[in-house]
Amino acid sequence: MSAVNETLIRDVVAEVLGRLGGAPVPAKAPPAAPASAPAAPSCGCGGKSAATSSPGLRGKFGVFQDAGEASVAAHESFLQLQKQGVAARRKVEEIVKTLAEKNAEEWGRIELEETKIGRLDHKIGKLQIIKLVPGVDWLRPDARSGDHGITLEEYTPFGVVGAVTPSTHSIPTLSGNIVNIVAAGNAVVFNPHPSAARCAALAVRVYNEAIYRETGIENLATIIEKPSMESFAAMCKHEAVRLLLVTGGPGVVKAAMQTGKRAICAGPGNPPVYVDETACMKRAAKAIIQGASFDNNLLCIGEKEVFALESVADQLMAQMEQNGAVKLTNAQLDALTKAAFTITPGQGGGCGHASVNKDFIGKDPAVLAKAAGLNLPAGTQLLFAETDANHPFVVEEQMMPFVPIVRVKDLAEGVKRSLEAEHGYKHTSIIHSHDLEALTEMGRALDTTLFIKNGPCMAGLGLGGEGYLSFSIATPTGEGVSNPRTFTRVRRCVMVDNLRIY
Ligand code: NAD
Image 1 (tube, helix red, strand yellow):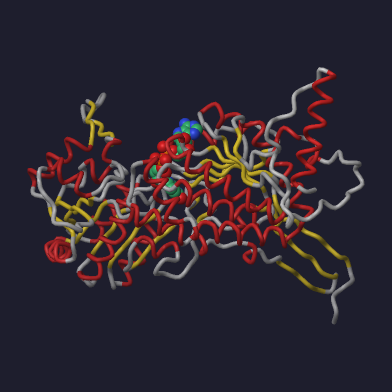
Image 2: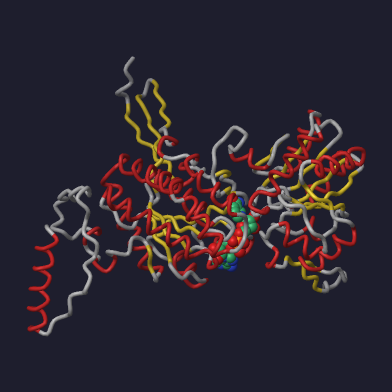
């Protein structure tokens, strides 16, 4: 319909309704389906299908105030996606990957302005690599063929996935989650972190507008614009939401597990690094700096504390200084610790409990240095200092561009200290060594989802190591680095005695 005709008709309808005392016609029409949107095929339901039965959900392009509406809209879109098959999933994957890369600079800046944590270059980098997240091609059915015919096991969707995203990588997590979840044939509703919700809603709208232009589906990824604990509860409870994916700290993991729904939990980490005398100190130092400084150490997989064998600790620290990290004196470390942690008196044992001061999370090295009382050379990526194993910087998941270095006397102590610092999260651990027995012993003992040898943490996500990328690594629930298969139901289809061709 041409714009002139549409305007004319709307005016006439408005006038007639006005005379009849009916509801006013909104001044602005919901966006018309673009010319490229495919005409909806007739399904014989007389226009009563879910896709056409909820005009209140139109024109939102995924952004909703209400968790119930967001869940219903996602469910409608799931049904539409089902009808359009694998080709539409592939199209969505392509759209999300293309737009994440195209908008990386703008969205990275917007996310940093909203959250005020991390580094602009790395915020941009995390969006440019969404193209590495596995999509539709990941799903291959498993087949068996024998005297009794053939059996096919297929990876099929759940329906709507309810997802929670962190403040540390809001748009990257959301984008990677959409790729995985939609590739598996699902729709998704997001309850984002309140302090990173505006940028998330912006990306959701842009994705849905593009998906709508290409497929006519409007709400494949929905989001609650002003998220809260109540909207989280409402989303989890909604009957359309069949599966949960939460990415965040201990609080949200516990809350998701208590909902009674199946939850895939990408939980907290506190990755230890062990360095022994067989490692290349230069390579180890560079890897630690690269991993721990990335986005000011916001990555859950990032190097958070280092246990170095006594005999090589000085060499390692010298290499770190030579490669751009700055060492703090004891007095500077004390000043930084006072600023970066709040120590509340402990109960019973009398030990103080340290909690991280949020004002320092993800801040630039210069901010930490100021609190420590020193001026940094330009371009400093990371600060470090020698501490003992019980220091708050070792024990807490601190997410700052600082690593504590702890001397250990042997492998046994290194493994023991690493285990304590990891807190049983079973997330990520790292070793720099060429001793096969040390590599094996640490791998077995730490029992982490990611175990990286002789590289920076990001090698564990396919960035400089083999593998693939995800921003949601399911740790306590065991699914590992998420991929499309993580969001599927395995269904078996059996043909008895036939179709085996020899
Ligand atoms: P956070 O735990 O403060 O928030 C994460 C999300 O959970 C947010 O959307 C928040 O609103 C929600 N949330 C928090 N407590 C909740 C509760 N009790 N009930 C319902 N929702 C709740 O985490 P953050 O600071 O945004 O992100 C950093 C944390 O996330 C770190 O612990 C990090 O290790 C972890 N993380 C893990 C992965 C992974 O793949 N395993 C990836 C990124 C971040």
